[in-house]
Amino acid sequence: MGGEAAEAAAGRAARIAPTAHLLVTGGAGFIGSAYVREVLGRRDGARITVLDKLTYAGNRANLATVESDPELAPRLTFVQGDIADAPTVEPLVAAVDAVVNFAAESHVDRSILDPEAFLRTGVIGVHVLLEAVRVASADRAVAGRPPVRFLQVSTDEVYGAVLEGRSREGDPVGPRSPYSAAKAAGELLVGSYVVTHGLDAVVTRGSNTYGPYHHPEKLIPLFITNAIDDLPLPLYGDGLQQRDWLYVSDHAGAIDHVLRHGASGETYNLPGSAEMTNREVVAALLAELSKPWSLVRSVPDRPGHDRRYALDGSKLAALGWRNATSFAEGLAETVRWFRAHEPWWRAAKSGDWDAYYERQYGARLAASTEA
Ligand code: NAD
Ligand code: DAU
Image (tube, rainbow, N blue to C red; front, side, top):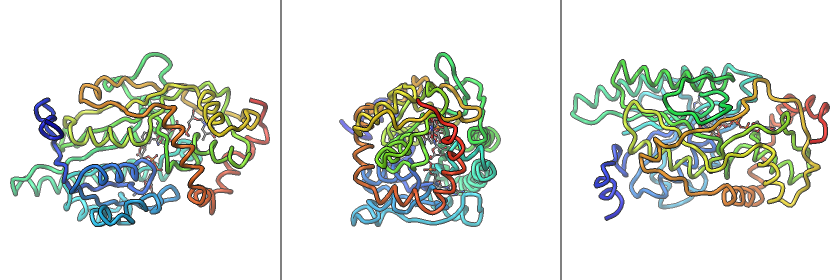
């Protein structure tokens, strides 16, 4: 017995059919594009519409392996647009069985410099999606059809820094950056629509994710690409902050598992497979690249820097999900991918990149010390 039959026998009958039509918002970003590749590649007959604004972080090239594949391409539709724009969103939501919302401004450091877009997408955008799901679900109920399921992709950062133990889903949220505050607000809106309007919705709180197509503004891809060019690696503060690293295909797979099996109104932590300090991560990637530690510079810390995140994953495990990729395997694959895709990351480090880099790191690197 396999697939659907095994799942049904284990009491986990899928709430979303394998051939469902999904609206994937933010599907041209890092994790969203991995999700599109994962679902279309693994589930025959599944269809996806991507809605993506193509901000600096969105890249149509992230979907190139799907769009150039004659079997997969006919099952993908791409729409460029904003989740905060109701006239764009409403007809797209009315045509699908479920919405998976990856769309967000995702970089904590940018939220400290320019928070406005984080609030617009993370709060107004989520609200526009929820209203469209509410209306479409009501229309479907009249026709005796199940509601449109909504999955909000959220983050472990909503718990704030966790110095000891592990965060469980029932713990209070305490976001400490504009990014995580916007993500927490989005989650609270989802909960309010479940209670007030009976929406069929689930929330995932994912851990720090890494892998191919990761935008080079983030720690691991920034340090890999800077190290390839023998540029300084700006490590914040003492570098003893802790994160739990989750390989991108595991994150995408876990989201799909929760979409298909999670109970409405519930939130699920998605932990990683490797709790490490930033120093340990940087040492591992330098070893993989055969580059020296002398590239690392200690720079003034991120304001409000969360010291540690750690998730309890028992609720997800009880739903039947296990991560497949160790940090050693995931990092080796990530380094291999970045080495093989120089044009991709050099393009991401062009245009406004130099101005951003100077604003973010110019004064810090000038004040840097040996790490
Ligand atoms: P990303 O920045 O790589 O991608 C975000 C995508 O959303 C981009 O394609 C962008 O163009 C699109 N987008 C932004 N605003 C939009 C809007 N208003 N309308 C439509 N599209 C818009 O981000 P990511 O790292 O792939 O993160 C995806 C989601 O996962 C986010 O919601 C993030 O909060 C969450 N998350 C990320 C991580 C991580 O470590 N990267 C961990 C946990 C949760
Ligand atoms: O925990 C989940 C979150 O992980 C997601 O919700 C966010 O979208 C995602 O960007 C990520 O947030 P972080 O702030 O943890 O990731 P980032 O890669 O920016 O930083 C990882 C760690 O490395 C953090 O402790 C800050 C540190 N760092 C980061 C950068 C960019 C540095 O020391 N130097 C750097 O230049």
